[in-house]
Image 1 (cartoon, one colour):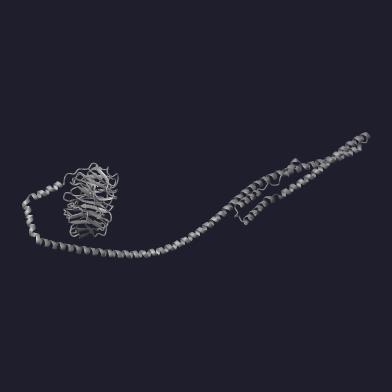
Image 2 (cartoon, rainbow, N blue to C red):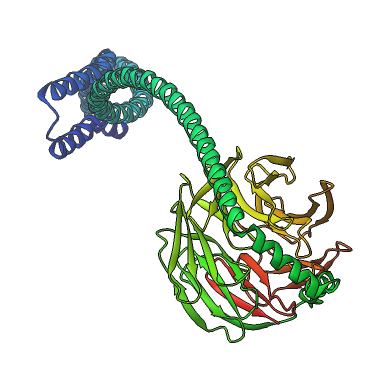
Length: 593
């Protein structure tokens, strides 16, 4: 009976997780005020459906259990009534026995009471058996109910988890829907922008085609105008050359007509005075100039000479001074012994790329990027001539031996010969490649020009090309220097990191100089012969000065302590052969001894 009462006291179902789910949803609903009424209604319907699934299948079992409990209570009351009746009968039987024993009438009544009592005991046993079976059935039902209740709890937990997962998934779905809406808006904006860009692209494409067509027309017109201009320039140059030749012929005739007899008398008198000593004196003078050179060993002085890159350096014939040209638009003249500045030559509008003294030392020229070559007098440092006519940067210029003419080379692929007595161009030579440097060889009767295409061209003073050293270097020429003894050979350097000596008579390469560490640093790097022609010197991109022997082609020395690994742009040998000057890209000047 205790078991039945305890089982009956248990709840039919555990506290449903539905309440917890609803509580959580309520809390989330407070947190998320954007959840609408449809969502709550949908959740309530889902919970009712789940409650129906979890409750209705067990309704027959619950009703049967309830009927068994009622039957059990009725049997229990009936059993109690029978037991009380049996007890009363026993008490009555005992009283009757005692009474009959006293009266001696025990026989018949005792038999009747004993029969009735046996019948009641039989009924009591049956009721007890039924009660026992009912309790067993009730216990089995309770066990099955407990199992089913546990299963219901498990399913309820699973359902609650599923419900929570479903709620989370719905929230994620809502967030995803919101993101999709935002992305759709962005996509629509991008599509509209893309359509706008496509329209702009089509319009720009149309404009581009129109401009391209116009550009083709302009290029054709430009080429036609360029051809016409070149033809006109050639015609003008030819006319100018013809006029100059006519003027020269007229002047020669005029001078010869007046001074021919006097000149002959002077020549004869000089020959009578010198006799055979004239040729001996010339040879002695030339040999005196070619004194033995010595390789410098150490820097004597190092100082900053310009505020920009130094492009060129040159000594005057006596070696007392040297001049430097720089990107700072100035030419400066320095004392070669002390290194002090003597004077500054101004007037150039852009960088000065080349500087040269005349053989007399009375004039100095500067080739500039402003398309002009200027001539200064060294005594008063004033401009004597400004030679303009090139249409490109002037990279190189050189005096003739007597100082009466100047030859200039430009980026406009032309050379010009200038007469300083009249101050204008007497000859224009078109050389088909940008001229980086030039030199006058064979006693100023031949011009040697180095070009961007790696070739060296030889020209006579009439503008005729005598020979072309085609592709003498693999890259562009940076410097051209004539040999100090007669100028029958020239020294060239290129961006292919090598130097070459070429014989202008046989057109053969006499010597080639290179070194694994030597690197040409700039397009206008200038190299130098020693005064006796026994050595050549060139600055390198690593800040060193490399000196080779012209006879053996061997490397003699590398001077490395002057420029601190800054690219050396130009070098020049002192006329006495014992000193040297070098310049670099930072405007530094180093005197070597």
